Image 1 (cartoon, helix red, strand yellow):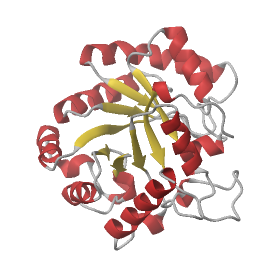
Image 2 (image 1 turned 45 degrees about the vertical axis):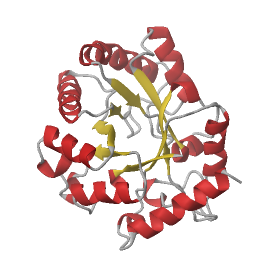
Image 3 (image 1 turned 180 degrees about the vertical axis):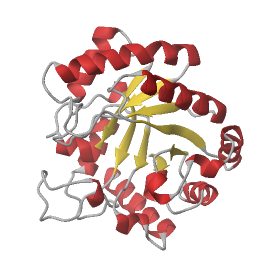
Image 4 (image 1 turned 90 degrees about the vertical axis):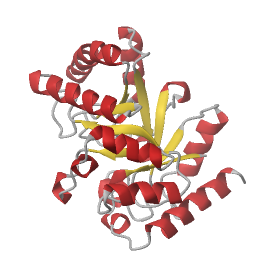
Amino acid sequence: MKKVLNQITVPHLSFEAFLDLAAQLGCIGVEARNDMDALDRPLFDNMDPAAAGEMIRAKGLRLVGLSQVYPFNDWNDDRRAEVAKLIETAKAAQAETISLIPRNDGVGTANGERQANLRIALKEIYPMLVEADMIALVEPLGFGRSSLRSKDELIETLKALEVEDRYKLVHDTFHHTLAEGGSIYPGQTGIVHISGVSDPSLTIDDMDDAHRVLIDANDQLGNIEQMQAFIDAGYEGAFSYECFAPETQQLDNHAEEIGKSFDYIEAQLNA
């Protein structure tokens, strides 16, 4: 199992402490984020991107992904500038991918409108990716308010635009469940995000990011089954821990608890 740690899981750690934790957990790499302003956590702790990349590699890690542009499918000049900036930063830090997140506020969800907005953005961003030799990860969000819930819809659009060489899918086990499951696309998937929901009283409609905790035997999302399906289908990419629950983010013993969860997952996958 190729393990990755997403920075949102431990947002209160300094960037270097985050890297040290990932290395201690046996991760192959990390996903860094630029959207933690509420926690006064700037990207790379305001470190020069090239220097941040050097620090990552010095610790034996890869910068698997750099997040994010939101909402990428609300295309305008500001969004173009944001994509260009993220690509520039990613190249300087030697990140392997950038992350594109769809609008998630109930706007642009109508049939016809959402597909058109998606096509426009993907088509506009594509030449920027080609020029930079960069891969973009697009993440469907399963919330009812999301403007891109369906992996099928995304894959169909990528094929129709003939841009599959520069875009990969994010399969998020939480969002897959919220979107009522459906097909998986191991060959087109760039990374799998994992997190658990342990509260059995929650319905799918009740679940939100704040419920996303470490995976254990109480998991309500079928993480093990989803991960096993990817492995059985020949997926060789990484599984990245992305937890948003405050109780997980604020743990005092991240190494112990995340390590215990990784051990549980691997034991189940090898059973």
